[in-house]
Length: 292
Ligand code: ASP
Figure (cartoon, rainbow, N blue to C red):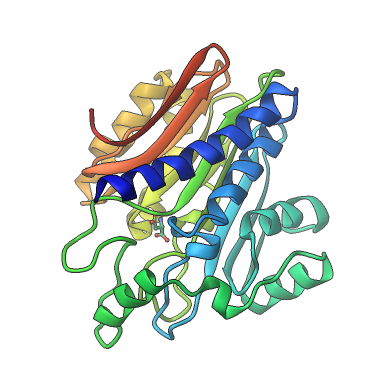
């Protein structure tokens, strides 16, 4: 990581934070804020979502995303969608305009067309750095997290946002290109409600990043909410318990961002770093990559 690269990542985080915070400041909903913040990250080529999505085993991009409204516990999710510019907005359309929660593959693409979602060409999603990442492992059985080339990844590129609005409603959104060289229609945790994304006004809103297989097995996002609801843990205690203990017991690597309905924030991770940022109405923004 060069200082220039670090500055570029921080700028990407700061832009997304500003977009989301501006909506909340004007009295907008947590749901609108998380969608807008994630769209901004999807449009930034540095992160593994939308434009910056990694290559799958066929040299293509297949994206997963989900969104959940803590007020009503309504949710929308899509998986393995192709050429959709902003998969997070497609998840929201699934939530608001269909009778379903989760659409995958061609059906999801078809639904996106019917609902006027924006599409982009393969060239738009082509990134030289990601392409070279894929070339190094394309003829192997390996699949990897974003950023890793020779060694196991220590930071993740999936994007997510959580927010609380002036009415005390909370929401969560997550979007990803998944893992480099993924095959067989592989779907990660990011589009799975309860694993990569969860929101319930009674407890918390959570968005996860990490090796999706472990997050699915541990039902991470819902696990945090359950520890708060049934065991009375605070947001920080519940998030730490899941990321630093339960996930590590099964060798799961990653982290999460979470907010509760009182506006407390937790951003634990068990890796070297996690690109993250947060802002509260009365305090300056915090933008971080590594443990401090
Ligand atoms: N959780 C994502 C997945 O498994 C990867 C990531 O967080 O970078 O698809």
